[in-house]
Length: 162
Image 1 (cartoon, rainbow, N blue to C red):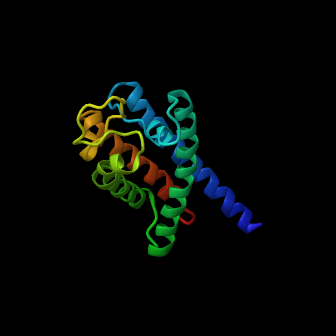
Image 2 (image 1 turned 135 degrees about the vertical axis):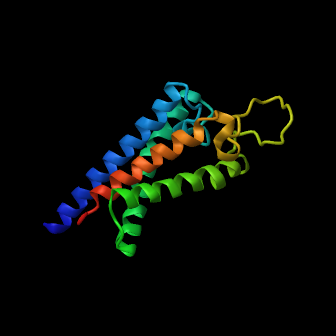
Image 3 (image 1 turned 180 degrees about the vertical axis):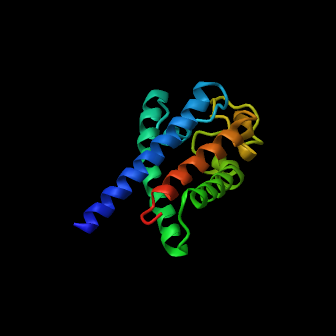
């Protein structure tokens, strides 16, 4: 019974954190604070149909939110540091890694994304996010870091024993 309660606790925490993250990031795009849509970027790696890409990407995004929540909880369990503050710091680190290391590499692994140094081609490619995602707006790094920090804070704050 305790294992079931622990699993339910994790599912609720991961669900709340992932919902908050998706709401904040997609809200930033809807409010024109940023042009970044991670579900769209992920989905277009699997489909060139933009409508289908958004649905596919959102499904992957939700699953990814739960997988990353598991990694966060693993870090909390191993380090013994868990709370909303520690979670927010872990979220900031995660967001910084995403912006600094992952975004610039995307054009090399995404089949439909143009590279920073590409010239005009006959086929229109998705614009690369660039360093810190700045090609998608100057507020992209801020909105991403805030959303990731809130994601981490929710997970850290709901970790058992905090």
